[in-house]
Structure formats: C-alpha cells, structure tokens
Image 1 (cartoon, one colour):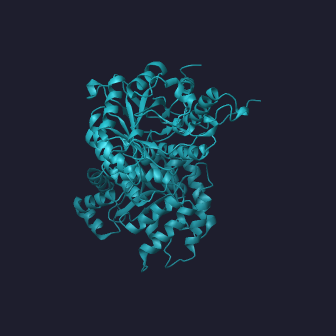
Image 2: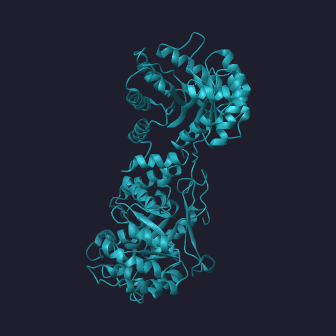
Image 3: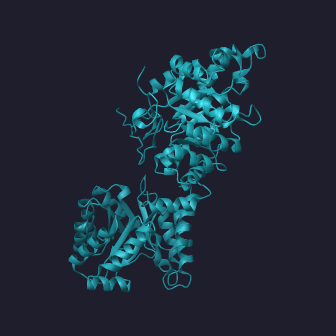
Length: 325
Length: 268
C-alpha cells in the first residue's frame, strides 16, 4: 500500500543578514579576497527548505604573543612561527586553508604583557601585510584596555572591513564608534543568554550601528561543557531570525578553539590519562567534533586552532553543502 | 499580533463629515497617525455615511495616497466592498466582512478570492449576534469551511467571534474567550482570530483599562488580530508584553522599544 508522506518542509519569511568581511582594492582595502557569510533562508543545511547561499567559514586563530597556555599538541604545528603573527597567519592560510585569520590581541592584557595599542596595531599591520584573507581582530577581553587599543587598531586597519570584537551589554560605545569611523564589522557577545544577545544588538543599533553589520557571538561551550545550552540558544535565535525578528537575524560566530583547548579532554597528555588515547589525535578530534555540533546549530563562522581539526571541518562543510561526497 | 486601525470609520463624526463633503484631510491625517502608530492594516469603514460605491472608492484612494499600509475594506454591502477592492493599488488587503449567512458567503468570499485579499468572517447570522459559545463556533466553522472550499488558506481567514460591551452584556466576554479557544482547533495552522476590540469598553468609564485587560486574556486564548485603537499607548504596551509572555517574541530588557521599532517599520 502506498504511504503518503506529508510535506513537512518549513519556509521562512526572512533571510539571515548577509555579512561580507574584508575589502579588496576596489573596496578600499588591500585584501586579495573577501568572505561572505549569512544570507541563509533555512535552518542549517536544510537545502530542501530554502537557499543557503554561503557556506560556513573557518577562521584560524593567531596571537600577537606566543601563547603560553596552549598544550604542545596544538602548539606543535605552529612551533616555528608562534613568535611572528605574520608568519603564523601565512602558515594558516597557505598550508591549512584558513578562510579568515582571527588575530587575538592577548598581549594587550594588563595582567599579561600589557602591550601598548601601538604594539597591537603593529601586529595587525604585520598580519594584514602577510596574508590576503580578511581579519577578525579580537581584543584581550579587558574592557578598559580594549577601549584604549581598538581606536588605534581600528585606524591601523581602516578600510579593511575587519570583524572587531567584542561588544557586550556593558561595553559597546567605543567599539561601535571605532567600527563606524573606520568601516569595520562587529561581534556582539552575550554570556549564553538569548535575552542579552538581543539586548546587545539593540544597544548597538541605538548607538547608530546597523543591525546588518553585526555578528552574534552567543558564547561557546566545548563538547561536554554546556554545548547543549549554547546549541539551543543558537537554534532559538536562528528560528526567530528566520521568522522575522531582525534583532536575531545576524550570522553567528563560535569560538571553538579557545574553548576546546581549555578542557582536559583535549589537553591531558597520554601519561595523565592513559585510557583516553593519544592527545595528538584526541585534541583535534575534540575540536572537530565540537565544531560539527556548532555547524548543525547554525554557526556561520568557526574560530579554530588545530590544522587537522580545520581540515576535517572544512571537508564536513563541503559535504554538508553538497560539494563533496 | 495583527493590528487593524479602527479610526477611519463613519461612526466618528469627523469621518462621516469628511466622507459626505469629500474632504480628504481628516482621512489622510488618521491614516498617517495610525500608520505611524504601527497599524498593520488601516480599516476603512464607510458605515452609514454613504451607500454609494464611488464614495468607498474615493475613500480608499485617499488612504492609499497617504500611507503605504495595507487596507481593510469595511462594509456589509458587497457592491461597496467590490468598489473599494477595485480601487486598491495592489497592496495587501482584507475584506471586512462576511457573516455566516449563505447569501453573504456566496457573494463576499468570491471577492476575497478574486482580489487576493484576506477575509474577516464575523460569526453572526440572520438571527443576529450570537449569545452563546455554540453559535459562535457553529458560525465560525461554517465561514471557515466555505472560505477554505473557495480556496482561501487559513492564513487569509480571520474569524471574529463577536465581542459585546461589558457594560450591557457582561456574560458574553467569557463566551468569546471560549469561542476563541475553539477557533484555534479548527485547523493546523489555525485561522487568524480577530475581534472589534473597542466594543468591549463601550459606554464604560475605564475604557483603556478594560480593553487592554481583555486583549491580554484573549491573546492567551489564541486571539492574534484586532480592530482597535492603535493610538492607545497603554494598550499597545500590554499587547507587546503579552507577546513576550506568550513566548512569541524573545525577551530583552528593551522589549517595549523592540515593539516600537518593529511597528515603526511597518509591522515587519
């Protein structure tokens, strides 16, 4: 007997905003390519329900100072370039296919090296000169210091259409002004809280910043560390965005590497946890698996660290986009 | 919530005079005010001011020259409705309204189909306004079935369970709430459910309070549209809050501003 399968496809009235990062010479910058994310009119990879014009992209993380808390298994692939943001970035792009570079200005942290805004700007210029992909520039996370650094860094990268982050509910005015003045995009951060995610976007909009130039960073949890909370927030935000809520219709960024490489499942050496297997395999696997989850939750930009994890995730993206079997 | 601005109605003296004298200014002003307040539709009700279809056509043209907002063409006369629909410039519209009477259904539903408009069906019949839940449901279902059979999808059908003044018929509001719950079960997705909201507070002292209290209760029951005073800011704030409480809008501390923002962009 023939069974009639009901058509349960959903359609949505609004597309997620399309955000283009980077600017080539014609656009007033010096990038050799731009990256466009967002624009989807369906849940992640539901190609049968609506258009998904831009695949998710992978940004690889580069620091302005050699990282002191990365385990050897993720430092290893970059051992020869960790003291040079420019070389490090080039390696990510040329050898590992990074779509973007996420330059993290950790060195500016007052509790660390407390580097000056000018030193940060020098790092930005170094990376801009050494690669042609667009940049994410992420502050050290100390609000006062970030507010000193970003005006200088934003100007150093003027016209390059970078993605700067992050603005939060408590600290957004300076960064909004910098992004407006020097034509950059912004990451809006919230602490695993959809209500605050919406509120940050309202605050940015109030300060005169366009909603279509924001990327939502809802915080990220590593696999095993609250990933399901973030997942459900991303899902709800995306459904609201597709359903017509313009304050929730921004592309979403997930900071995978930073979270994953902070948890013991990725870090612990074999000697400490003999039952867990080789950390050189386990760590990248943890990072890739975490990233897969976020792809399915609706991530548009993944910030990652390990080349093997990046390779696996980029392949998964091609498969999910139907470009590779 | 779909809000249909009620003010361009010949029941108001300034509008009746404007229609009789073909003075466009008061019409334009109320169209602009209601659009600015976030109306999703502007109701255009010629009422008893004129039986001439040409007057309805004039009225529609005046409103659509003033604002880009969709229009609810309001009359109980099919020929007047047709004249109004014919005058439209292609924007979304509602046919307001049919009753459950066979002759009305036969004449008015085809108008909604022909002009690609939504349809408001008021659960009345030749016996008058319904006094109980059963009649409201029976008439509502009859309109819904007839409209569906004519090809209108549920999202273009608005059922009105007939709201009565609390001052004169205090037992009716609770029956309307029950009928709203029943309407939500008619289909999946259900049709829209709308009321003439200001009916409830007729001749009362606390008009706004009664209206906004009822609308919140009705929204909890399933109401998702209303012909109402969109300029009543406290009413709008209550509707905005109810949408958050019903989890139709993601909460943020500035949810009232989110509401205003959405409304200022034409109800998107």
